[in-house]
Length: 250
Image (cartoon, rainbow, N blue to C red; front, top):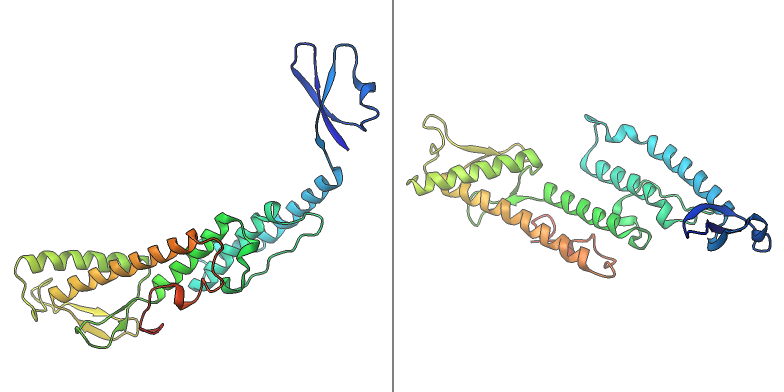
């Protein structure tokens, strides 16, 4: 049914109303005119309202997953965040009369074509986060076998801080092989993800910080390349599109 804006003699908008095209004149008293805005579909409006109610119910059902202190592994967190965003996007991406409801699933199984550009970027950032946090390797002995080190935000901050201190110590003359550059009473040791101990002199710890920064930078630029790609490659989530690590084949 058409939607009209009713206009007074001064050209000001008075109100809007829905009316059949052959009946609009009955609403126009002297001095009023009507401007057709669009063919408003009241059934579509009802469908949108129903979609929003069900969408809100489904989002609320997963509120527990985003509460502070919720116990979830990294991939669970990412999958819930993307799922909730896809629900929010339904008013843009779905036919409200026949919506296709998203399901909680690994991001590699999601068809990027069903996502808004913002959510597609969010999905790429989620994969960047997963890879950055779970795939940081470093060989304390140059040329030796790399070990995986924790790389969550707290660990990243600690590595960056230690690397900065190690750079200062190296500049102040801390020699290779000297392990008490940070504390004169204790050898400097870092614990790897498998709980093994790795002594580091100042030059090694400085290199540790440098490689950590390079690890972050490489993933940031890999994610940017994917965000700029149109269309997004179907293999966007595979090792071929991301920096190599010992785990992925370096």
